[in-house]
Each structure stands twice: as structure tokens, then as C-alpha cells.
Image (tube, rainbow, N blue to C red; front, top):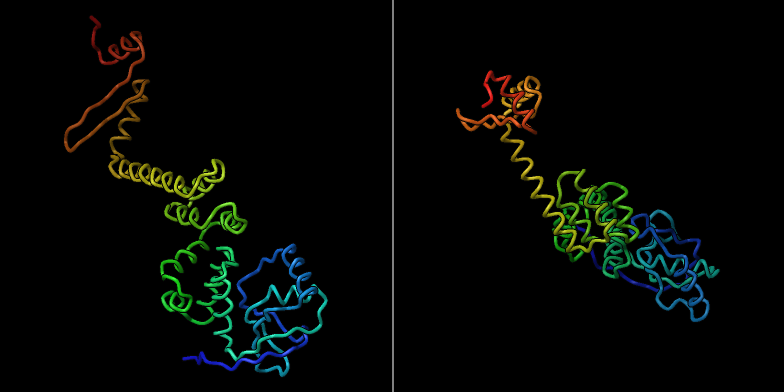
Length: 271
């Protein structure tokens, strides 16, 4: 088990000696926000120093644990050195700290969170339950984020850009058929459905799909083939409805002349 305790020091070090944490989940930074923060840093300084850890195989070099936005803004402001909090976190704890801080600050969009969670599971062999405990989240929440990554890329991009919410994504995932998921997604965009409206629509879709599957399961393909053959012979729609050894043959006609034509085929004289 890894040791969670560590010694913290504050030092001023060269920006060039700090590398970005490869496990940093955040990938999108607003240029406008960075510019605004860089102006603030020039005016009043870097009030909240980023957290870094020493790189074990490179003396004098460090890796960001948290505070990448401040780090980028400081570089944008032209600073050569910045104050940092130096901790001794392991690589695994560093990655978990970076993710936890961003999630707790709600700085990440759902797709970034999902990929970050998957990365931690893949790289450090954590179970969903273990990760949930360390992140202070429910296991079901972790599972829902990971399921979002199974959605098509266009839906993921819409979540990423804020066109649809995580609530919409969960509703789309409630449908097992990929085609129905796409249909519901397009309906959400077209009609600007709220999450509640999307949930109601998903329920309707599920009921229709269940009814269709039940009808399909009860179909008798032998009787359908007979219906097709009789339909060709009669020149009109024919339905055979069977139940056990009994059933009915339904033959459509569209006017009196059509009825006379069918009676002639049966060899029955019209009255």
C-alpha cells in the first residue's frame, strides 16, 4: 500500500523545470480565462502556488500535481520562475490528486472525467469500487461516467461542448439499441428536450420496442408464407391468424366488383 503522508515545502523554481502531469485529466483551457488570469498574476502575483512533485530520475525537475491553469497563465504572463508547493507524492497518488482536485472543483467536463477515470483504472489497476472510495463518489457514478465512453463520438462531442448534459447521456444509455440511442440523441438536439422530457421519450421508445419484439416472437413464419402464396393467387391482401390448431383467414376486398371477382375464384355465384 502506498504511503499518503508527505513533507511539503514552498520554493521558487524555473518554469522550464516543470513538466505537465501526463495524468492530468483536464485537456481544454479557455484562452480568454488564461489571458485574464495571466493579467491578474502580473498585477498581484501568483497567490496560490501550484503543487508539484520531484521527478525521481531527474534532479531539479518537477511534475505538476495540480494547478496547471495557474502554471499556464504564469508562462503566458512571461514569468521565468514561479513559487510552487513541493510534495513527495508517488506517481499514482499524483494522478489521483490531480483528478480529485479537478472533479471537486467541477473544472472538468463529463468526457474529460470519464477518460481520466478510465486512465486511472487502466494504469494503476484500480477497481471501480476502489476508485469510487478514493474519489469520494458512488460506484454507480463511476460506472455511469465510464459508460459514456461507449457512446458514438458525435454524442461524446456534444457532451464535451455542452450541447447535451450528463443527464441526457444517461437517458440515451438507458436504451440498449445503438440505432435507438442515435434517434433519441437527434430528437434531443432537434426539439431541445430537457432531461425529464428525454426520459419520457426513452420510456415510450422502450415500450414500442418491447411490443414490437413480442409481436415478432409470436409470428408464425409458416402461416406468413401461406398468406403470401394465397395473396398472389387472390390478387388482394390475405392474413392468416393462427392460434394453436385453429385460426382465421382474412381476405380484403375494396369494392363490389372486387368482391364479385373473389366469389368467381371461389366458384360461388353472387346473389
